[in-house]
Image 1 (cartoon, protein in one colour):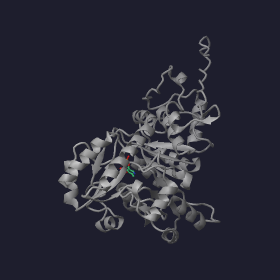
Image 2: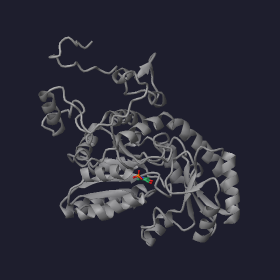
Image 3: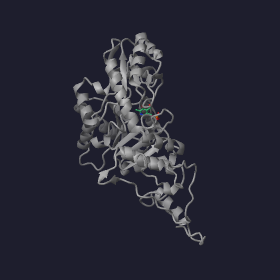
Image 4: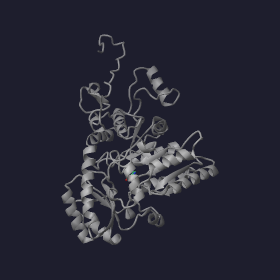
Length: 440
Ligand code: PLP
């Protein structure tokens, strides 16, 4: 108890209760952990939910404590800051969110950001120097492709890419090509960057194969490039890339994790050794998400399993209907993969088929636009992973900046409509798609 009769004594810091990790020998599941992990109400006047900490800075207990925090922050002492210092670095809402996000991928640490793109940009900048090469799968979310090919290029960072779904042999040769290019440029192969499933085609990358090939290519060398993967389409429920050899998982938390289309945020999860350099750059640049957004994401994480499960079930029903529809050429849905090697990757890596897929409408842009314009329940909007169903036309919208020949090579065609199924009644959605296809 605080001794109020001795004002010269510093107020002792109240220690949070240790987080509940297991009960009766049973490990707490991620869903249960989302209701309270990392937050002790005793520290906040008994508030059941964490208050939103709107403060730009945190008072130190003493000048010596302030010095220790800064020694940790600047790397003069191992272990980072021992408490909260300044809101560009971190805050209580963001720290609780990071603790909870890490649980889903069984990661050592997580970091949260102001957007998926600021997570990606901070990650790439933290890992690359002039002369380096990034090896990436394709397609990537168009802003990520642009950031690598146009912005990183300005700082002397080059890239080599391979198509998601490339054979083992092709992936091995692109690793060799990227290493050679880096050597010629006087740098290193700094990072292997994947997006799987890829936006918007849903093509899968064999994470296990690329990890094995990376390890073989760098055997005996002191350092290996980390494998980062954008898991936005299936995470955090339906794919756990760290289990398959990836080192860093990337999320646009705007999508399934946020889940209500009412915020923009990003996240990274992985081992401390990969996360620490990114944290240092985030501290400098201030790409951390704000406390309000962190609070909203804590609310969202409480229902993420419920929402994703329902959306996944709805998508299976809608796709069963669409697959038989005479105006649908084919579907890019992970629950109905025709290609044997993609199916093999799916069986090894994925825990569910997701709720974001491509509908290849018979015809081209005109028919696709007519279909989109006729939808009444599904909203015509980019983004995915929200409670409501959305549909968009990647070739004319999110991926409009991808050059035509690259679009053709990667299968981003004029008759591709991307759909993200929400948690509405599945039969209502089927009725909506039916009447809209009649207009196509
Ligand atoms: N990664 C993928 C796969 C995406 O679809 C998006 C956005 O659509 C992003 C990253 C970027 O995320 P944000 O919009 O939160 O910056």
